[in-house]
Length: 466
Image (cartoon, rainbow, N blue to C red; front, side):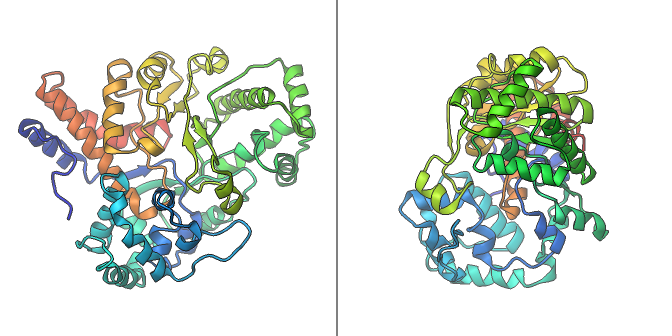
């Protein structure tokens, strides 16, 4: 099912070059510095329950496509926010999934899933309604074996480091359990402060109270609030964190005078900020987070540009992260200037910028990262982590930012078994791009080998301090 030349250039000269480059890097360890896998999987090391729970229920790439064709999320077993009834028969869910397999033709989801089916579970038949039960049984049988438990798969996937993502309000019990377990697999956390820095986040005032309780600081004052965040960052570092992550609606930053920031926080604490004031507060907090990163060394990731929870019905019934987040137009040059004026030249700061708006790669992001020492470009993300998206990224940013102002690849996934597949796709696409440069006599082949290694392994370790 998996062709050895998949995703390589069709031109014979470039394909042969891509093969040679890929052979040198395909077995490098996987460094996964940003993702959303469940740390409980590795802390408890319990068997995955069944194929539907492994592949369908946690993967919004999968169920958003089915939902777009009228399949109810309840019928796919996606948990409701109110605890309401959903389908619990996993075989029935799998059969439904199989009946809509044709929807994934031409999508990266199909690449990832078929890679996992074959390389992890040895399945080479295409998923169809006729093969659904046999494939379900084959995967289910594997999941009962010790070599398919989370830690064993982690080691089999050759993962050197994997980062999960948690809220400052999370006491990180699973990471604490992992730290005490003696297992050598490196699973670390990432500090994601959105619930306590975004006034529009549901339950913001209650979240600040919870932040006070878990940090022991008074979040009723601006200074106490900042100390509470610093306290939690320190705790996350003690659990292995090397990075923060910020999923703001935009890249807007601010650098207010202390008195103005304090007054804005007081209004945010009470609730009722205007949209412009809420945006200003989020912007101020990005700058505060940059200041803290200068002090504690955590790499900063900014993931703006998504209209989150666009579908109110899905949000009401199922909550966040259920496939209803939609990309919006983004702007970075003016938005980031207050932060960059203060910290853009600081040698101790690394900010990794992501976007869902490809129109800004050449015009804004490549030029910013090609100048400011603090900035690096994150890889194609979310709707762009596709073969075409990766090719466009290299084509649009390399001439201005080069390779070494990028940070390799991260998979940003909740679907554990897709991690090797996603990294394999990125390595193949990068090797194809480098092969073209060699074939066009724009890069020597020995240099291409060095760049391929850096893109697959070296740059991500350096950017995330791993």
